[in-house]
Length: 547
Figure (cartoon, rainbow, N blue to C red):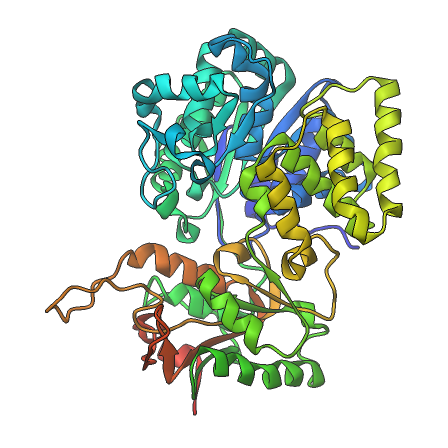
């Protein structure tokens, strides 16, 4: 593979050793910048030192780690993972006992929705949209958080505020962070919440070099407490952070880039291109018949050589409900990316089970990957590591019928924790669901990729079919009795999500609506086009097809 030729903007960001904010558009090579900076830095670190690499998803963290280790690079004691993973493994699990006192049994991290009713007493509905704890709320809820801790429970939704409190009140935690890590890299900073932002600033105050990467136009998680204002706050501190702008899209065809930029500015300059590769389709029928019609289009893409494999074709939808229409309507082979029951629980046990499933179904996943996950929760001696390696390797010979029990046995042997009923139920759900199980298997070149727009973040495909482009659906509208004005729930966030969907496409982007739609009660409604399809400045930038 040829060496990457960095642009002048990329080179400036790579070579600077200052704290910085990098604002980067889709396809601008931001990951390559982070990787190059990390590789250059770790070369000069001591064996016990490393950097912190925070990404938004587990998949992205695995990719970042893999790229940083390419060509045999030793990343030493570096951490690669999500912010929740970092909070648990590097702050809460090792140091909360210094604040709250030791617990006899290992801690369990549970989402609010999985708490028994009596354990929710005194807490707001942390599972509801728009209900998010901020660091200033810690003192109010500390007695409840302590009480749950005494029952060995940490609530997933409190990780941020709890981590900020621990890191600023545990001298042991501060010494550990300062001695082990030299720099902090956080991707997708536009989707940071207030506690995550405070944690970033605390690590900066500890003396770590801090690098934040993001794009305000890709902020899509306001519903769970994220706010692009936090990356803007960093940009507004030029005495602390250099601001590097990397805004050349190397991924998308120029016509796709032109269309995406016009969503935000009807007068945005356009790149010269001989071909329009953005299409607006309005098909006859409802959501199910729309998917059925797309089958023929996908076959034609392959036959005409517009993409090399089905895995380079993605179908993106607005909600999990729409995934069912795709499942029921697609006749070509496909893979659906839906919520993983184990990942949503986020305990040491589920992380090990997650790794073991990957090891069993994907031969590219190594024993060392499982052992590294194990060592986040337990220190292994040389002999113990050798024994654990043998235990993990035994999994590959297990028939699928005996897989569940073997997974539980191995997991308990690795981290010396008894699996809970909730964790066991989550494992059973995965093993019984062929669609979820596929997510643990290597990408099949003969499968179309199906997911929500949110899950598509950070991915790229030759061809994207972007569905659910209906009035009332996307952008979501509010219904007010007797009012006929168009009132939207959150136009800006929805438009950002639409932008993310479009910019997943490298070669062709097809925006799909239909003449009819089924609402949430399965009532048939007229399928008026989404307001996103009629934004000023777009007509000359797409091809229109209406049945």
